[in-house]
Image (cartoon, rainbow, N blue to C red; front, side, top):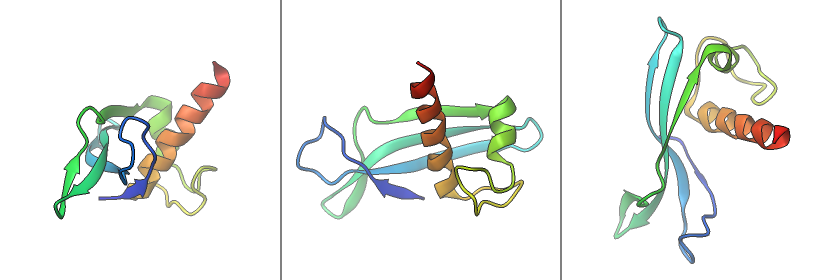
Length: 102
C-alpha cells in the first residue's frame, strides 16, 4: 500500500496519511477503479478515517495517459505498468487540471 501524509481539516491534531486502499484493473477493458482514503494509526493499528474514502475510475484517454511511458506527472514511470505512487500522482494531476479549467 502506498501512502503519503496529507492534512485534513476535519481531523485536527492527528497525523493523517492518504493511501491507495484498493485497485481493480482490467488490461483487457483498459480501465481501473481505485479506492483511496485517509488512514491513521490508532492503538498501533492502521484505521481508515470515517467518511474519507473516495472511488476514482481511470478509463478511456485517461487510462491511455496513465499507462503511457514517462508522462509529465511521473517522468520515471514505465509504460504499460504502474506503481502505487503513480496512482496518487495521476489523480492529483487530474484534479489540478480540473481546478484550472473551472
